[in-house]
Image (cartoon, rainbow, N blue to C red; front, side, top):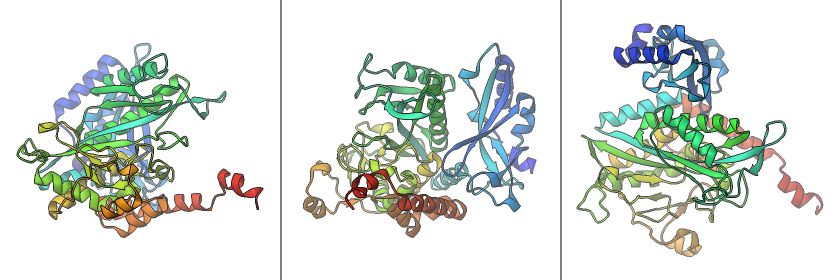
Length: 453
């Protein structure tokens, strides 16, 4: 087993550098992290003295205790750390000692990739793209809310401030929290591009630089963990729930994606009116064609579909435009190496590994099959009449998690991307979630029906 595992590691110099950092920073503990199918971060902690065993993939865990992973009769799984994800945790540096972490891939006892690991799902997508000559670049934008907590430390739905879009202090009370998040992320190797208050009260965004698809998913996972950890230190609760409060904007995770070939941006063509290549148009067409089938992955919660409604800047209509923010897909203004496609429907509750994988596969499906891209829609779709949308053949995203699950199950892109293990477990998990919501009696029903009937 171990020879196969070690073969996936980076070079010896990287390991020696890590050992030197551990020595200099007096790192005592190593957190080995991975995510479950829903994207929830898990970890096991070992001492730094076990580093050599760790990097050889000798750390075993019980896969049957992780939702959607392994049956109890085949429960032994191993963690293989990605040395490039090593980071000292800045908030643990205290009295001369510190802790560090690795993000890991999950392996079978024979050293092969475990099919149930979302990180491995994305690795397979990256490899398929590579075989076609492409490198996938992704830059996500994750919004979040900061809420006050009660006397027991439990989250409330009271925003931490009443600031608005781009407002500074004193209205933006989250400025200090964001600064500490920024410093923590920077210390862990992130390049931060912007930090600001978002549109809704208590809503924030910190943008980090794009990267290859796997690194970007690693970064998104780390970002969510760091945001929650730093917020807790301020007595606040950070949530990536898409729509925590009715009547105000929800939180999105716009995904900017590009394909590179031979070091050049495959989406850029200076001779085109929009400076987009044929590959870019085919990729857009692939996203439009497949989006209904992958919405249950990019928008995975019952609550996700409370955000995807008209009037709150969240796209719910299937169309594209070079600049129109009411469209599902837009093309940001920068061109050349920065040419990219922005998919605006995903939300930050999505598992980044599965979301980036299915978005990339959907676009590549359009490239491989040479789909024809429909005309762009530059009108404000939110304010169109139903008749006008029908005339332009603008369809809607699924209106509920239940409908999205049906589309995922009946489509082809989900199973192709996720593989049988994750696909079947994911469908079963989401059906249970939808049934639980569908059969529950909600406060709205009591308020509207109890007295009346």
